Length: 90
Image (cartoon, rainbow, N blue to C red; front, side):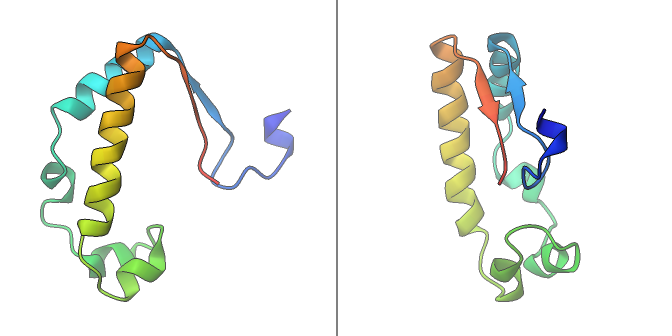
């Protein structure tokens, strides 16, 4: 039973192929700059957003941008192929 164990940042989540398509469509229309607009590394450090050490060092958002773009591409391929996804943050 997932809720009985420590899974890190919550239990794994299963996304159906329909949910993957919905997420892929939303990500395709959301550029990285939209959710990051007006947010600074200091804001993220103060809110203790993972990975905290990156924000405490004052690194640029390029670190996250690269990962965001890879995530968008991953969802696009999964949606195109009709795949479901298991999402887990550990």
